[in-house]
Picture 1: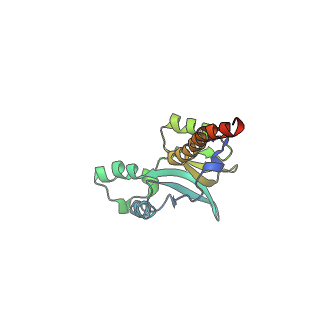
Picture 2: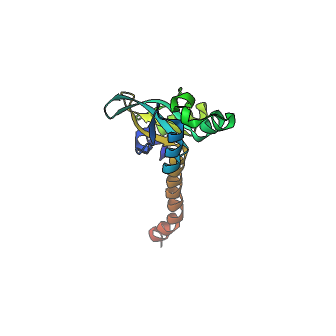
Picture 3: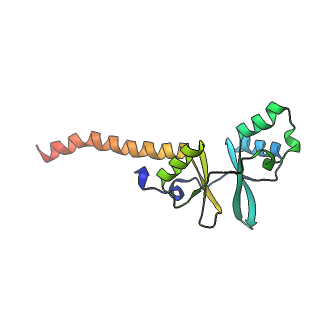
Length: 154
């Protein structure tokens, strides 16, 4: 069941990320190519080690750039990203992650290891998928129960 799982168990480890100094138009292109609505903005801590610096969403780009007639080629991700990112630790329970999402009003939360390095991302969609699998198991139990009862009590 969902309540026994951790962020590290349900997170998507194939995180679409961008360095915070990348041009915003390149970040938007990456979003389109990877079919995502947000990117985790990172800064390198060491080779292959990524610290979460922020998040940039398609909405950030629309509101901060397009709606203000600014040139995305001249801006960097760090110019429009959210810097106070709600992050979950890989050991946080799924219920703690849900509470964090609710408190912060976000649909996606980067997941970090014990050293604060990016290891994955949890999206509301991931949690809904897990929950629907749990509910499917319950439905299977309910539908199988009469058959088991008939076998037990002929």
